[in-house]
Length: 81
Image (cartoon, rainbow, N blue to C red; front, top):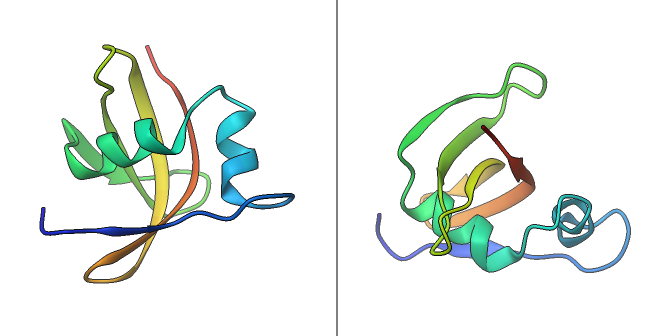
């Protein structure tokens, strides 16, 4: 994937707060979006979802929105089995 700029918003209802609810860091979410093992469309939000592993081996699902060819807004992320 070419260089991707991620949008991170602190506070409520920012996307960093959504990640923290699941103990996911922005760096972990970025790694999964940039190097997914698979992608799909979320059944609940109809947004793109990436599945992948963090450097520590944690498997995550990251729901995101592509703003343009180089910008991504991560909506939330959570552990998957």
